[in-house]
Length: 259
Length: 252
Ligand SMILES: Nc1ncnc2c1ncn2[C@@H]1O[C@H](COP(=O)(O)OP(=O)(O)OP(=O)(O)O)[C@@H](O)[C@H]1O
Ligand SMILES: [Mg+2]
Image 1 (cartoon, rainbow over the protein chains, first blue to last red):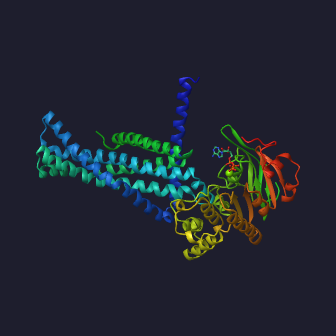
Image 2: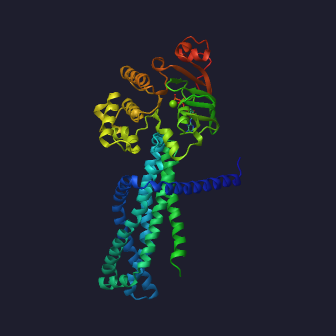
Image 3: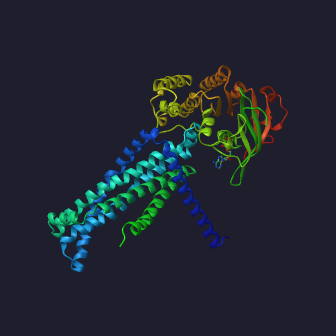
């Protein structure tokens, strides 16, 4: 029989190993960047596939995120007796600095991060990554770098879309459900909009994209044991990226948005 | 250390508790054609993977051209690997690329040839393995034997100095298998390619080998010419080449 402490110890070692592996993958990605020019074609290919894959879902989700943000804000305003002309400001701030970056990133992790892990994982278990290496092709440059870069650029781009659509969703709910005119809502949004917030939101989005790409590739590369292993790696990829996104989001809040 | 092209010196490899290789020694001279035989699961594929450092030994070392390959990094590792061509047991074709792209990938990435030249080489190699008509298909549309042959075309595309074939003829009909054997013999005789082939097919082994090496129990049990192995009195060897279930080798 093993004691709980042994199990805890082993879990701890596994966790630290994984975190180390993820950092190592980040390092190898950075090193591979010096060969970026010759891999630009691969990068564009990935930008296209990964971006297109997630855009429809981001659009649908953003509509409802904006809508519920407006509704819940109005509900709270009523409770504290705040005037509804501030609705546009509240929704705008929440969407730009929190809702759009975080939710887009989580959706992206579930769709694209999982896809990257499944693809690389099945390449690993079918020896395709070994085959690349045996041919003298660096799989980090050929497979990892284009995918990570695509994630890094795509998440911020999708967040811009998400912001527009979520504001639109909030506007519709305000006009129809809360009885705030569209001018009032948009004026509020415009007054509260700060370029600094937007840039911070983009920085967050880029870091989330990096996390999704690196974790997705790390899990794919370390897949073992057939189809079951690929499934397990895919789940791990989504869970680890999502947790890291939320942890980093909190750290960003402390650094970027000082009270 | 001798002046062999490839020197395998006392390599051992364990996977968790499973001891696969237990001190394998083998020298391969330039221009030799070696066939490695042995029971399923005895570590033949594992041995081949050590040669291009897809696996690293727990003990011992692999030398290529006099250099311990574990000391190679970056460009030098890539250059070493480009001197090899490897056919994987599972073919390991890239399923996101077409057959032609699979065969040409190494050349495309090497960036030493023009696109037209690569096209020409790809067509030539596909013709050598009898697959000119599938160049634009995806690997998933091919039969197992066809995939093997595409893998073979890919392995020889870069005109490597050393070829590693992991079961080149398994899954092929006898006629195609013989064509592949002829091709291997040709590459070896005409271009003086050094080759190491793993096979269970004794007909093929006798046809292509200058030297046959048998792995047994994680070590080299036999190392000699085809004639020597035919006349060997070693029980293990006899049982294997006659294909008998009774004898010292136990089916695990
Ligand atoms: N990456 C790995 N991780 C764990 N065990 C492995 C790994 N690769 C091979 N093995 C084990 O090593 C042993 C030898 O495998 P190997 O593939 O070399 O056999 P083989 O001689 O090529 O057999 P076959 O003729 O069936 O292809 C097997 O027991 C296999 O389970
Ligand atoms: Mg094998």
